[in-house]
Each structure stands twice: as structure tokens, then as C-alpha cells.
Length: 429
Ligand code: EPZ
Image (tube, rainbow, N blue to C red; front, top):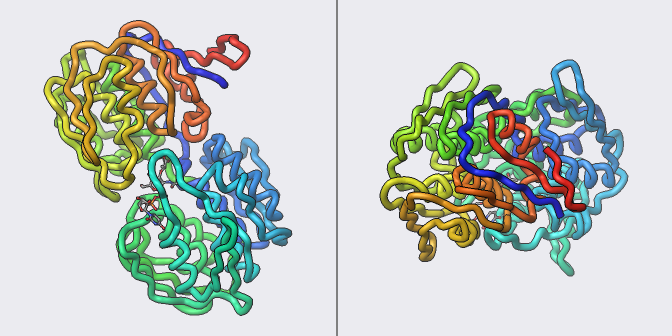
């Protein structure tokens, strides 16, 4: 398995273009199941997760073609016919968002057999809200031997659905299923994450009638059929936030471009509060730190527009070197502090109790061998390595490859000393 080696101490100076959002792209790709015409997605990130979903979609009858189009990286997805409604355990287990093919499959063909995803390292992550939403839309759901068997031979019907708490995945899933249902669906207590708005824009470009995404109430008026469309994937706010934290950690001046800074206001406000320079620009943000030590600040994760759980690990890494004690509360996932013991291997002073971590800033981190446990945890270790004395080696970086496009290239372009150690022992820049 590849590893990443970081020699800490170099300041970051330069520009990092932000890629298209992974967590939007994979839901948009699933939307291709809803039409027999091609869906062209531009600003597509090339990631293990998008490749992975492409593999599953191909098995279901979607042709997936990646290329460099007139407006950059694109993927064209075309499902003239759904040739299989079966998503096996092996494919769904490896990437939970694969489960979101269930709704579009039922909506288009009236039946599907999709594996339950199972738990993962950050929490149990059940899919009960997804299934309740699909049942409310008229799907008959049976669970056997780890699989969801779903049927709606006469199609799905619009319904009023009130989520008991906010779920990004369940909101997206309900939207994907309801667009070609018969009648009007209203989703109450919907997730407001920007990726929902991106999904709405893509679905509407395909002929759907969706309103209100990005607010707690989404109204979907079912249409008989969707058609092909071109849609540009929204910039990745988590990638943008990650590099903002990396710049704050290493010091220097980094300009993040092709991004929408207002999507991470909750992070940028905290960076400013900690004493970091933040300048919002028309297409991104400039992060500056001139060597002064940052102040410890507290954060609590929350659904959008609150502080994103997907930036919590990175922020914890930053706080390991801040002046004072920072309290970090995780409210979305019950087990999302797996990076804490790894950061402690680098010399961080962290104690975790339930959903709260206390990080007491130390004067210096020291490079060590550490292990990635999930996507955002992995990148928090890279960020810590940028400021640690000596060499940090992060193993199990297949997690990183799931969600960060050309991470080493983007960081080295700004002066970081980061290299990938290939499985066979050869180093590659
Ligand atoms: C999405 O996960 C993202 N993944 C996550 O990013 C992100 O952390 C999360 O939203 C919150 O922002 C993708 O978009 C692929 P949820 P999702 O449903 O949709 C519980 C990353 O690193 N819940 O909003 O799975 C659930 O267990 C990933 O890119 C139920 O109990 O998140 C969690 O505690 C990690 N039943 C909470 O709700 C359900 O049916 C919020 O989860 C669904 C969710």
C-alpha cells in the first residue's frame, strides 16, 4: 500500500485550484440512472470514489466516459437502458454513497436489490431514514440477508416526508427518487448543505421540478421523464477548507481559486478568530500566517451552515500547535476522533471524552509514522506533518485518494515537501 512522506517546516506559498466536490459528484453521477439520455458532468474530480461509483453504474447499464472536454475534466454518463437492478455488497460496502443508486433504480424501473452498506470507522451510519423516505414514496421494502429488496411496480407517488433529524444522504436520496414520482413531494427538515442545491440545479437542468434545496423545505413536483443535460459540479468546500487549514498550519500565503469561500464561512471565521489572515476574493480566498502562533479556539460540528464535521479532523490538527486549550465537539458522528491518537503519536496533547476532545497546544510536533483511518483523518495527519519537525509517514493513504485529487502535487506546488512512497518502495513526487 502506498504511503505519503512529509518533511515538515516548509511554509506554503502559491496557488491551489480547488477541484469539483466529491460529495456532490457522486450523487450527480447517480442521477444519470434517471434518464435514457446522456448526462455530461463538468468540473469532475478524478478520485477513487468517482471511479468506484462509475464501476457500479457500469454494471447497472450506464456507460461512463471520462475525458478532457472543452471546459476541463468531464464525465459523460449514459443509461439508455437499465440492464441490472442489482448492487452487490462488495461494491456498496467499499463506498457507502453507492447505496444512493437504490432510489433512482426504483424510480426508473420499479425494482432494485441493493446491499445495505454496513457501518464504517466514523460511526454506525444506519440508512433507516433513506428507507423510510422511499417507503413514504410508495416503495415496498424488504430486508433479507443484508440486502434491500425494493419494489414499486406502479411507480413512486409523491408524499410529505418529515425527517426526524437532518441527514444529507437521506435528503439527497429522497430527491433523486421523487423527481420522476407521480405528484408532489415535500421534504421537511431537509439537509441544507450546498451539495443539495447542486443536485437540485442538475436535476432541474434534466427537466425536473425541484425547489427549495439549500433550505429545510424542498418541494419536488414529479415529471414524467427527465432528459440529458450538462452540469458543472460545485467546487469542493471541504477540499478548500482543508487547504485553508494546511496554509494556516504551515504558515505562508496561499491563494485558493475556483472556489466559493462563503460555503466555508464557519471555518474561515474560526481561522480569523485564531489569528490567521483570511481575505475572501471573487473566486476563492487567500490564507496568510506570518509565523505568529495561532490562538486556541473552540468548535462544535453541526449541519450546514454550522462547522462541517468533514473539517473537524483538520481543525484539530491545527489546534495541536495553537496557544491554549481548544474544545472540539463532534455532534454528527459518534466515533469521529480516530485521528486523535495518531496526532498524539506526533506529540499532540489531546484527551477525548465522549463527543468532546480537548486539545492543549504544544510548542512543537515531531514527525513519526502514523496511520490513516478515514478520508478526513488521513488529511489531518498530512496537515500536522507539514508543521512537524522531521519526517512524518502516513500509511493507508488509499483513504486520501478517495477524496483528494492530486494532493501531493497541489501541496508541493506551494513549496511543501510531500512525496508518495509507492508500494514497491520507490518514491514518486
Ligand atoms: C454525508 O454523509 C457526507 N458523505 C459525509 O462526508 C459528511 O460527513 C456527512 O454527510 C455530514 O455532512 C457524502 O456526501 C458521501 P448524514 P451522510 O446522513 O449523508 C445519521 C466524507 O468524509 N443517520 O447527514 O452519510 C448518521 O449516522 C464523508 O466525505 C441515521 O441515523 O451523512 C449520522 O450520525 C464522511 N440514519 C447523521 O445521521 C440515516 O438513515 C448524519 O448523517 C441516515 C443518517
